[in-house]
Image (cartoon, rainbow, N blue to C red; front, top):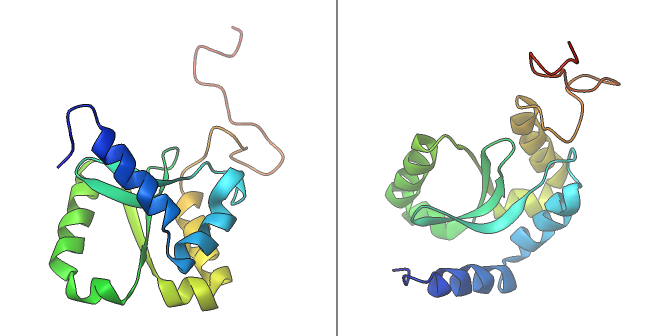
Length: 139
């Protein structure tokens, strides 16, 4: 359980970042610094009682990278997904072996999930800026 000052949670997340699986480290190289569709991702982020592998707040998208250990944790993963969904996040899961062997497909799936939500940092339509909200058009 987390301590009141959050130090345990912070150390756990830092430990997960330092000890990332090969698949997580490889995927992070494609997600970091807005490399995928100019979306900002963070890794190993606390969301309620869970730590999300990768999180894009602009799109409210969680990307989980699962290995064979998740085959026995179907109920836990289901509860985790249900919790995240109840908080407004969309969750996609990818397998370690897909990240290692089919990165282009994994990135396409993530982009597809991101594509339904415009990011404030890039245009909603090719060559055009996001439209200004009503009342901010200088009228």
